[in-house]
Length: 53
Image (cartoon, rainbow, N blue to C red; front, side, top):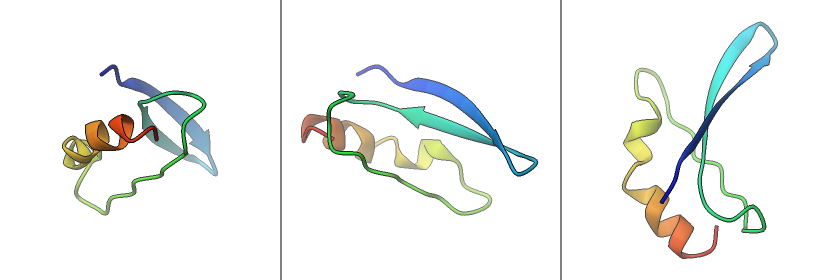
């Protein structure tokens, strides 16, 4: 599984975005709170990709 990292600048802040899975898949947004970061979702991402998300 390949992860795509990118950044979005909006409203004076820089958001880190990680994407995986087919572009035609069902979109799912996973959000975390401070002080956590995207790596906390590392075990859920492959299951979502395998489900077509």
